[in-house]
Amino acid sequence: MIGNACISILHEPSDSEPFLVLFKPRGLPSAPLNENDESAYTQAEKMFPILHNVVGKKKVEHGLIHRIDTDTEGLLLIASSQNFYTYMQGIQKANLFFKTYRAVCNVRINSDFICLEDGFPESPCIDIYDNVFSCTVRSRFRPYGIGSKEVRPVVNSSGKAALKKSSPEIYETSVNGTFNSERTICNVSCVITKGYRHQVRCHLAWIGLPIKGDPLYSKSTSETAFYFTACGLRFPFYDGREMSFSL
Image 1 (spheres, rainbow, N blue to C red):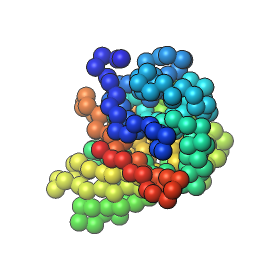
Image 2: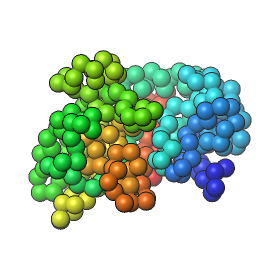
Image 3: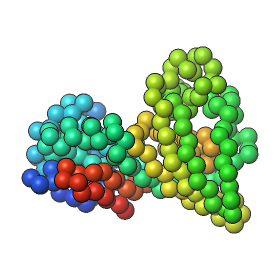
């Protein structure tokens, strides 16, 4: 346990529903880098040893299906059977696994925050009506910065070097936002079906709405809290039921 960073269980695995849904607090990694490193998965496996039997893409992660950044709090999904893990790989490829995020953002639309020298391409336009907007942000991604700690969006008009380094797939983030009366703060809800590292965080910064307290994509902020939560999971189950979990 890192400090008081303990997971909370929303759904326990069973024979009929072989998966675990848990809440991970900020500051706790989703998965270990090495076996038995402190992480949300490690804590879960101690509570439910059956998780260890699942073989995933990474040996130390076993059946971890949905993971989030260490800085982010929110929901994780872990398979407790090999069949469910395999099933969910197909569901993700079919774009039927919906992940919802909540964020409070600073408003820097039409400002000089987003500039080409910071590795961001020209920002997409947002159509705002009566302090409310809805848009879908699309891009490829590439690693960026010292140690590739960050990512940057890549579009067709990006330079050859950026295009060469980018992911082959295009990733989408659906964003719904509501501004305060001064247009200085925006509350947003984002939905993705497949995710790249830091996808939502980077896409929001790209459109001029960096998350308050984001240590990577809102560097000029003095906020110490990070206003970002992975708050919802939704997917179809074997028997046709829709499984939905939310904070």
